[in-house]
Image (cartoon, rainbow, N blue to C red; front, top):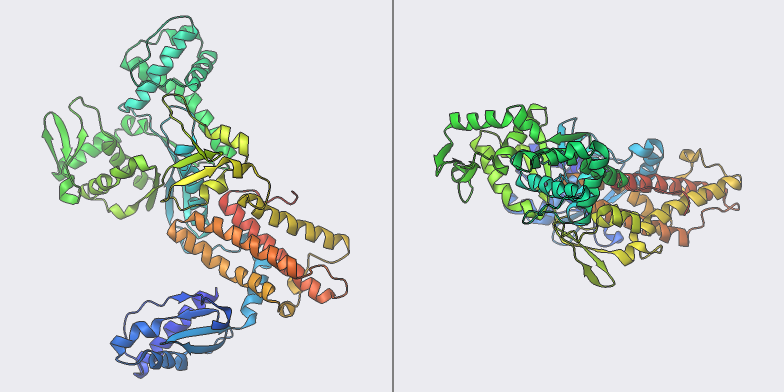
Length: 556
């Protein structure tokens, strides 16, 4: 990547200057930016301005010393000092040509790196309580977490996707769902039962109850006692049905998990009890009002937190700490959690709890995604899971098709309005259609070239120096920048940057195609070079769409 090569060259120049005494040795970050105008160069660096005070020299003099010490490099054509001391780098056209050739050579591997060096990372996302179908409000984390995992894989990490099933015996919502299911089961067999206060009343509960009757039969379900233990038993039976629906829905979005982890295992394996004993031995817990408390205020939390209630029920924090122990025991070096906004307040307590337990909080990373609102005809579509007024994710997929792009189109720390009307459109106004159409158009161009007898399988040998049009150079620059953009998006946990990139690349290609004739039998060498560029563009588009989990159609 040209940008990293330049950073290395500048670092070498600074080392030479420090050794010769031309500049003092000092710690300084070397960062590159793209100038606002092409005539100002390909990259610009402000390191001279940042060093001038410590060097006690004018920034332009610092810049000149750096330029004089730069090693020879075929990538750099020339350097210029601009303004108060910026160094502008003009790169040789060969670096653009090399980028295109790299794309053609590496194919789907173009853009990948070994930044992660095989470190084991787990991304846990969605993990909605298994108490009903997924809806848009809690499913934004699905495409986001899945794409973060894809980005980390592309940058060399060993990644596992995990879904946590919140089915622990102390999960009151899970037990309440089991109670609600039990009421519906008895209603279906002709027995009236009273729905619990705040019970789950949606039509989907009736559907799940009907499925349970088909799977287990009336006799077995009717025999389950109407008490907490019975409600828990019913919830566990219903979980199998609910999780099957969740799996199917997420698979429709292209999301496959390597691990479906049951929270109940933490209790059955004794992990929760072992964690409580560990915290007691560390002296970071105390008893008050019959409950067990963790001294989280000693580790940065605003108040101490309950671990075990006076009833004996373990809190979410208690199971979270045991769950992290289990992850670390499985060999993960870094654990990423993608949580909804309703869990944001838990993060400081979990991190304080880790510190209290002698675990580096840095092994965890919490990403909070904001809510999604559906809009239709300019109006917000309201929904409530318990009342049954929901738009399920499956319904959304069936109605508008591809939803991942829209769910990834904004940074997760911003609210997202999902425009149903826009998602239904098959036009350039629909961003995913626009991007997919670019890939399909390129596929059509290559098919036409082949039909006209132009070779499209040996374009690596094309004379790319013939590509001099500004729109050709812009597209080639795009190829060169892409690996760095993937790494940046991975490090920032920013899939929305990849979504924006896909639209930018599609727009860059469409502009190129409007000004540069690709298939031209009167200029075979230029045509061959442009076919090479077009082929490379298709590869990168497909790679981007692959990271986003979206198909790259060859016809539309």
